[in-house]
Amino acid sequence: MGFIKMLIGIPLIIVILVFAFVNNDLATFNLWPFYIEITVSLSVAIVFFLLVGFFIGSFFSWLSYAPVRKALRCQKKECRKLTKKQEELAKEVDTLHENIKVLKEQEPKSEKISLGVRIKNLFKRQIKEKTQN
Image (cartoon, rainbow, N blue to C red; front, side, top):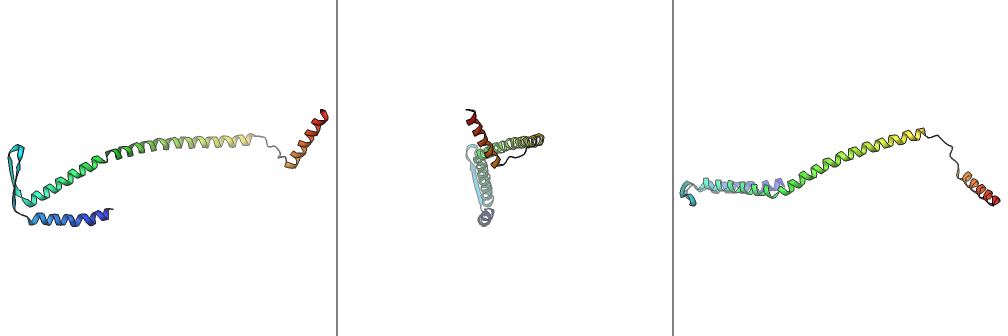
């Protein structure tokens, strides 16, 4: 985008400056409410009014993006809060993982019973219950 601005802006500035400096006639400006007359070269007046227009446009552009800048500040603030919260939760998760490891180490190791043995025990229970009834 910057390249396109330069591609359009530089020739436009050159044309305006050439136009301003070719017109060296004197111009008289009346400042109406104060009854002041100013006589300056037309080229100086053209360059002055272009600069004034540029600065006024820049100012209004800056003002129009004020809500965007405010929203960006709020999002950055929220991002910092969420980052802190995430770090706290990550520490808590690490602590919980360590607690799980400690509990697993403390738990007595029991032999794993195979599926076949479990099924046999199930049938033995059912037979014992039938005989007792």
